[in-house]
Amino acid sequence: MLSCDELERYHRQIMLFGEAGQEKLKSARVVIAGAGGLGCPVATYLAVAGVGHLRIIDHDTVDRSNLNRQILHWDMDTGRAKTESAGKKLQAINPDIEIEEARVRINEETAPGLVRDTDAIVDAMDNYPTRYLLNHLACKFGIPLFHGAIRGFDGQVTTIIPGRTACLSCIFPKAPPKEIFPVIGVTAGIIGLIQANEVIKYLLGTGELLENRLLIWDGLHSILEEINVERDQSCIECSQLQSDPMEKVK
Image (cartoon, rainbow, N blue to C red; front, side):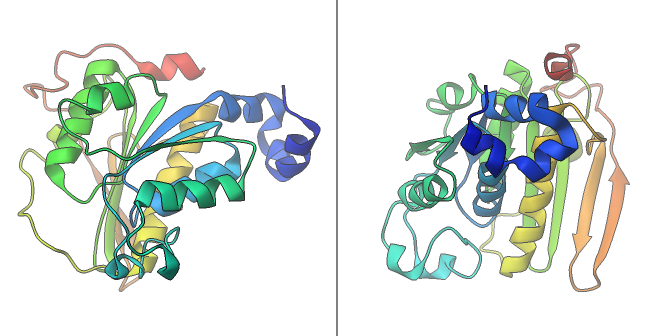
């Protein structure tokens, strides 16, 4: 049940999808892998929307070079754990939700326990080895994965529904070369907000998700394009999957 405070806080969005929809958001558990450029806007907008439990995972501390794009971290947070910095601000933004701070490195040992009990995984990482691990676990546990990536003024987003859509390994069979990439903060904001929008639609069971579509943002020319993608029938991660996790939110 929604409290009187929650009914007031979420009044404008309850007009869109009713109290039942808001209760779906309240009961949801979402893991956000990364509290950096993408993770900050994703977490902020899922928090204000009333997603009931957010698990923020990051092992790093705030560096001054993060501050041009990682909007939950401020100058005074330099040297502070990113999970603590983000967690405290998110709790202040919305005290009605639960914020779980997981200051841990995502690897084969830690990741299964971090994601298996959640309704959605947000890929807000900056490296492909960890993205592929999240993709593997999403396929293994049947949990949707919301992928986003940025570089400079450009970004990309897709929604992966195991057993229904192409997975990350289908779309990117090989990782791009590792690099310290340039980025402008607004790109992280744009891509992160599209990811958050996808998560909310999925949890509500409404709208059309970015299924088998890779959305490409060209910020220098303000152009959004789509690339259609398909499942690889020989993919080692998803070719044997048949289940459709969308059924559990209908």
